Image 1 (tube, helix red, strand yellow):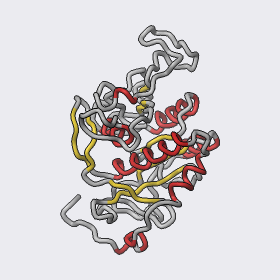
Image 2 (cartoon, one colour):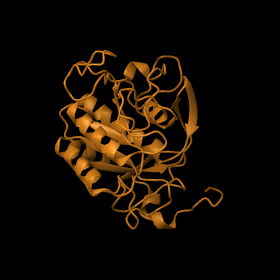
Image 3 (cartoon, rainbow, N blue to C red):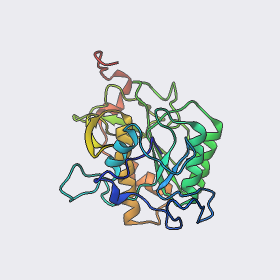
Length: 266
């Protein structure tokens, strides 16, 4: 769930989910799911069937999850063979209602987990939609946010909703330290993953380095999808427990409020 994907990118095209019940560009809702020509997903922000990435964010995140491996180009995702359903929820800013619609669509079409590298204001409707996804055994993996903030005190949504099917992800750097910008929280953030200078796919058949908890969350999604590939019957709770019980404990996370903040960044 993001800004869309450059689904023609050569490192991603082979791993883009295709709706088996829909015929492309015939103007008909072939599978009767309420969406016309939703071949690879849907653009819920603009209410059309073309979830193309007009910026870079969703394409970059997708490459970290599932850029193809052993193809002699670019980068390799955590899961080389994951199928990515394109659920676009906005261009430059996510829209809460679009996110709710995307969650409901993902459940309807069988998505077992979502990556959520975005933040929005607190919304009871969104919380209810994420909880409903959990009831359908869908795991919701979310970026903790980029404000050097203690989410226990000042929550960042949707990552901070206290729901069993959410994994909230902080960003770590190349030294296994909490990234200077990353939000954290003893009870509201679950783990950290690489989020500094991450090389991944961007639109136009290109690649670039980006930094943020947005880049950390898809690493965890890739791991979760590998677990599902090994055992598709795992519940959301079982996947979350497997991930959180096998992380590397780091001393930096034992004293989050005393970490160094980089004063040269804004």
